[in-house]
Image (cartoon, rainbow over all chains, first blue to last red; front, side):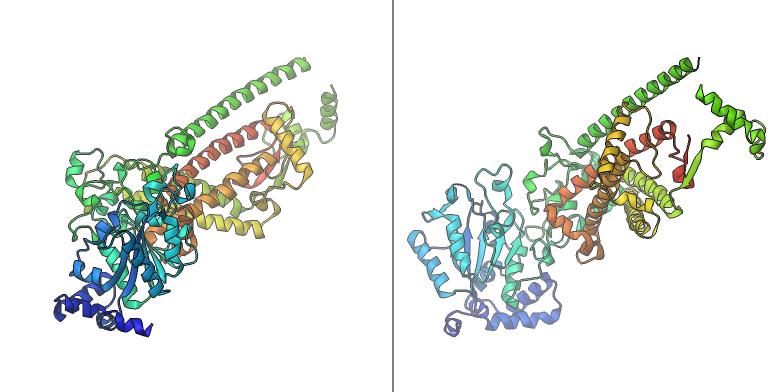
Length: 366
Length: 255
């Protein structure tokens, strides 16, 4: 390990080599501390870690996915994102970003695993399909699930990028013909951090990596294994349209007057109240906007099974269990109606029977 | 035939004078009836208070819960700053939910320290053979196959099943899912989150918890229909008092 340390450059070395001034470097450290919700006293700690620690080797594998996580990641808007974030990790294997291809690429993977056993981070984008022995996703001539298990065996920790790796996303939506399975259900003996979203916010992705490198541990996770600093609140809790929700002012139809006024999209099926993510605070594309700000409800892409929660445009979810499209209200009203009719009929029969008995009693008395 | 002889015997003994406190319009038939009526104290005051508080809370919860899922048409009587329609709706829902929760725990306490009838809500004696026989009789009574219903001091077996299903299980479910949903706003690490936040993880997606909580409302509505109908019907038809018992605590048997 000591030998490795001397071989790998520190983050700071890489930055300086790329012509980044110390001033810019310190600026980066303080912005990172702010993004992670840390006090200013952590800035020197981050700087110290980056000056002395060797870069952490990362293996980034791709299963069933659309590469939107990678697309998001490389657009991280924090200062020096392109140069620093991709340099501070030693991205030793990433088949969509690396120069090598084919056998060379596979050799690089083997080499990294062999060289940094127990020290590298495995980032997984997408998930393995398990049906037909995993034949629905082939990497380098072998099922992806085999590559995943192989790479996970000696990993220090695993990052599940995006809704695919975290929960399954669209390929795992019902009826899930390929049996696409989220990473934590395949790899059960490693610490896994979920960074859901379709894709996750760029700054959230780089923020998680920076935290892990700086402190050499996982950030605090919530019950579902997501970093609490980005996923502990709902979109709804920090939404700038929340005052309209509390006031009872809603968009009733697309393009109505209320939509133009920027009222709450709750009635249009916005999933902000059930979705844990940082969109309403961090926002997207250098903080330019996020779905609700552009006038469309949240679709809940960072939630488990978000494709199976009925239409994106309904507030009360359709219950597919009932065969036809029905929601809780329709089911409940039918059930209550049936019971109500039954009660009415029962009351009528009761009254008739009682009347009948009375006349019989009278006859007997007579 | 035998009735008349009994009446005659009764009227012979203490006669009209036996009920001096009755007002003048009491007929001979009334006096005879009084003699056959018996009553027994069933529900202590905390149980009765819980019943009506619970009923009130459930009514408020259903009303406000409905409007939280399907809000009223947008109102524009003021700027959003001065208008709080949805906020008050949710406040009423949460407040009623908390009263219901405290009441439910109070009711459990009643079952522990109160009389034997206060315990009936929380169990179904499936292990008792005689109880199953009575379930059958009660089913036959509701299917118009029994001429006379049986008398019960507390709940009849069918009512006990319904109470257990809808109140013990149904209310527990609504309290648990309700607090899980409340914990989303209260925030991670808050008391509601520590107590019920795991329910959200259990279902995976909070949208599912919203849906089952909503279905649970209809479950309670169905119970209300059956409960109110059965109470009024049995009050009229089953030889014993029902509705007034939950006010005075006394069950009166009419023959």
